[in-house]
Image (cartoon, rainbow, N blue to C red; front, side):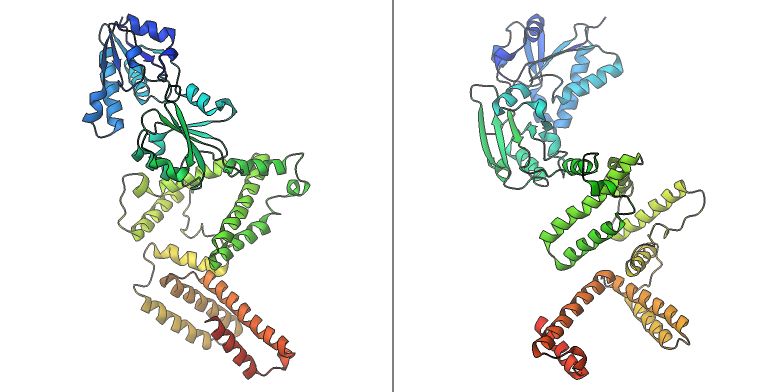
Length: 485
């Protein structure tokens, strides 16, 4: 029977941290294959075996993925030989070793036995250097994987340890990912050569991470938690606490129905912040709007209807499914091609979910404000080509609707024609990439502001508005407009 593969953990670098089992396994082996010779305790290993390494492969391949795959392939081939193979890796074989994961997968598929000899991992000396207990909450993340992401998979209210920050380029990529979650000035700690005689810790703001010249394969970064609770999970915990039996009586009384007005109100406050271009207000109002989402999700969780993770999973799957040009092999030349693809995918989804025909307009909520609803309808049908070829056609249609409104014989007809006229105005706004709801809201604000100036001036003069002539009111109105300009 084949001996198979024995994988030995060499510990974090201090020769005193090599386990007795690892030492005896190495000592008894005629040959040992090292993933890399770049390990501090290499000279302290037993002198009996013949040591080989896979270091040459790092120069022969363009990426670490290719290197690790080739190492795993060669170790599997050696394991199939009668004498088997002893393969040694830094730290512990089960922690942060991609080659071991690949070997275990391939060995299982081929029925090749694998024995793991545990070693002291990088985690123990690193946590000792930092003075932190990982059982109190510690996220561990591979820097090579983190660098590939646009947003870190981390909870900012829980400290994180990022390993394999082995050079400035890697540090720069990791920094850019972390900056989407943490502020520039967030203090981090760089841990170098943990557990060795030249161990060092250096505190710095996050933005300086890639300015260090002494990074190597024994470098890690400790990212403390945020100073104030800031994570999605912390927000959910606060909401759950408010709804708990010993929570807030008012929050406990709320239902989906009672919160409808608050949801609408917070939505409009977000829109107001957008209209005013006030980023500080937008930051605050988005948090308030999110509270409404968490409120509804918490009620649904308590009722056993669904959890917030179910809503998010559904949304993630839908976004990925509807963007095959991003997450699959499809191609989209421009935004219009994306919209056409989007509608095609939605039609396929509607066909899967309904036994009968479902209109492409069915998913546009009738609870939307009329202008917003008209704009959504027009955007939707334009995606499938139901649109004027040029804006001139829209203008002509608008003139036609004005004439029909003027010629309407009675009030019901006039109301219908006014609706058509407004619909055409929305279409004109769409062609000029104007949101009619926002445009009208801004006009309302301008009118309120200018009329307020008229009221203030009338009050200053001690004259009631109704006592002023139309000419006087017009003059004040034009003055208010001029002052704004």
